[in-house]
Structure formats: structure tokens, C-alpha cells
Length: 139
Image (tube, rainbow, N blue to C red):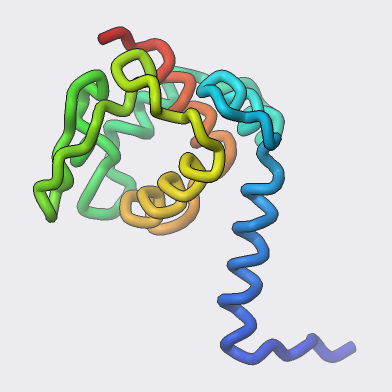
């Protein structure tokens, strides 16, 4: 059976649909870091591991940057964008209560930053691990 042919413009449409589906998969009420952690953990089918999240956050993944390149190894303090120098508020929810308070924003920033750091979208397990680690940090 011949494979269906999709014109090039359809690939970006398919990516947009996939992104919308991943955002829609997060519960609408996922407005706290714990709720978002639980949603990503449910999507991944595995228990989040804070140690794995720390390792992911502080390591380079074959690209120039790690998450810590901009957010620092201590995400309870302000970071600075590696190329623009723009100040970035702390990543840890204990130091910045706005972090992970909006599921759509969380997904948007994971998509952008994972692409820069890993060269692809992060998996739900990776997102859950990072949030799990960030939740262990105190200011």
C-alpha cells in the first residue's frame, strides 16, 4: 500500500497539531508545580526522579548549552540568558512562585528551551524529573 504524501507545509501543521495535543494533555487545572509534575508523570508512565532531573538540568546533551547555562547550577537565584544577557527569574518555585503556575507557559518554555539544549522536545519523563528536582530546592 503506498504511503500517503504530505506536502512540506503539512509537516509544520502536523507539528502544531502535536504541540496542541501535548498541551491539551495537561489538565486544564494544572496550575501548580505539583499538578504539572503529576500530569507529566502520568503522561510518562514512570515516577519522577529528582536526581535524574538535576543531572538533566546541569548536563550538556550534545549541544552548546545546558539548562544551567542560563538558569545557573543553583536555580534558586536569578540567571542570565547565555547569548542575550537578559536576566531570568529563578527557576525553583520556592524562589519564584510564578514558576510552573501556568501549564501553557510551562509547555511553551519547555518546547523552546529543550530545543536549544537537547535539540528536540523534552519527553514528559524529562519534564517531570526537572520539575521534581526544582521542587526540592529552597531559597
